[in-house]
Length: 188
Image (cartoon, rainbow, N blue to C red; front, side, top):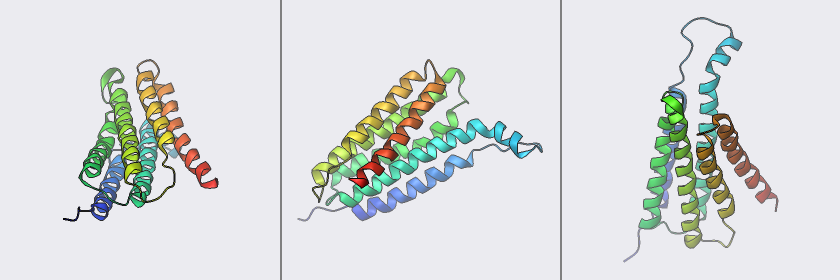
């Protein structure tokens, strides 16, 4: 009996989930109720726009990783499919966690947001490790890059308890590092 390859179905489901999650990130931006200059409105919206920017960058980065991983995996069996579904659940949680930043007292929203980022990064790392076993090519997988992103998101989540601003810098650094790593990997 032939094992079912879920690659096409998973790619379609993933594209839909990422598209909806990335759209929902902007759906909760609260526009100013009164008329004001553009610069004043941007200053008032800055915290929400910052969260939107980081969350969108994280979602875009993991969507690209997901597409790359699917393209390099010959067979997606039930085990890899289950971990992918957990990963997609974490993607669905990203807009919710983004909304909680600033809405929960005492930095609780930032901690939950950081935990969501760390969960995404951890599941991404796990998926790369599983994909390495199921790969249909000999090219190296970005395991080290995925591990560093995971470590950075976990570290930022711990740091947020003492310095939310520094945590944001660490999280942005993790995204920038992953983008630079990918660009450097293409040159070699």
